[in-house]
Structure formats: C-alpha cells, structure tokens
Image (cartoon, rainbow, N blue to C red):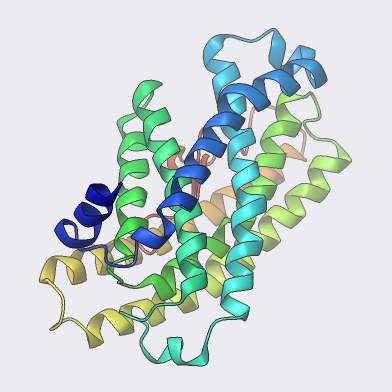
Length: 287
C-alpha cells in the first residue's frame, strides 16, 4: 500500500489522493456490490415481469440504472453539503484550491467512475460509454493534483436531473408510460435539468472558462484547450438535449407512444447512462 500511495502521489502527481484511497476503494466495491448482487436480487423479487423475464443485457442495463440512482442519492447531497460548508478562502483559488471534505466526495465519484469504466469495458456496447467512463475517472482523479476541484464538486450537482431521468426510465420499463406519475416526474425532470444544468450549469461554465484563462500560463496548454473546448461543447449539448426532452414529452403526452424519453431514441446516447457530469464530460445514461 505504501508503494501504491507513493506511486499515486509522486509519480502521478496526485498529491492529495493518498488520504482518500480507502474511501475510493470502498466506494468502488459498494457500487460493484449493488450492481452484481443487491440490484439483481431485489429487482427479481419486486419486479418479476419488468426484470426477471428479460435478457442478460436488459437485466444488466436495469442494474446499471439502479447503481446510477444510488450514486445520485449519495453524491448530490454530499456535494451540496461540501459546497455549503466549504471554507470561504477556497473560492479565492478556484484553479488549485483544496478542501478536505471535497476529497471524500470526489473519492466516491472516482470509485463510481472506476466501476462505470469497467462495466463499459466488460459489457461493451458502445465505445462512447468506455471513453466517457475513462475520461470522467481521469478528470476526477486529476482533481487531486489539485486542479479545478472547486468546479468538479459543483458539476456533481448537475446529476440532480439524472434522478428524474432514471425515474422516467423505470416508469417506462414497468408499464407506466404516459401515466400521471410519469407526467409529474417529467415536469421535475425538465425543471431540474433547466435550473441545474442550463441556468446554474451555464453560470459555472462561464466561471470555469474565466478561471482557465486566468491560469493558462500556469498549466500545460493542453489543459486549457481540452477543458475549455470540452466545457463549451458540452454545455451547448445541454441546450440541445433540453430541447429534445421538451419535444419528447410533448409527443409522449399527445398520445405518440413511439417516442421515448429516457430509454430509447430521443435523448442522445451519451445522456442516457447516469454518468455524473464533470467540467469536461456531462452526466450520461445507458438507454
């Protein structure tokens, strides 16, 4: 373990990571346990039609959404707690500042992304899923340099809308398409997506770009280009996905049963996997 800590701290330059490695390990094992044991056992018992009679791939997809929902219920409140209780001085150095509480929430997110990456590799469906998981794992572990951890914590709040997106998916799969429950959930999905990703996310994106410009001479140019362009492109995609969700919900409740929001054609593949967002990669969910 000492060798690993030295490798992570000195070779990889993740100087803040060693104290949080145990949290990282336990988070990964916890999400793996939910995926492989808890979700299959309880889903088969509580949803015999929607889950038990499906193919292996469909069951795995269901379990992935369960893990995603568990992650949302942990990471969003924890990230909000860290933001509300962080030291005022942290905001004075948004590029390289650090807070001990942030180390724990980012360790949980990193553990989730490790599980996410391995699942995408072993249950290979789309190279985009693999790239997304690996990229997010790299970005959140890079926050331990430290680098832009201030924004990483705030971007985790974007995952709020994923809670309602997962609900929408489960309602579809359990035969509740077009019901009042799905309509109410759809309202909260659109509201949370707009407020958290479009309004708050837009504000954070602008602040993030300002910070990158301020420290552009202190970091490799690749950091500025990749983080900057990725942030702009993916915030633009948030607007596109928001438009598609509105159109999908309107058609769904106008009686067009062929349009499906959270599970199939409407939302692009990379918003359909419950992946928490980062300054470089927004949250995504498997269809």
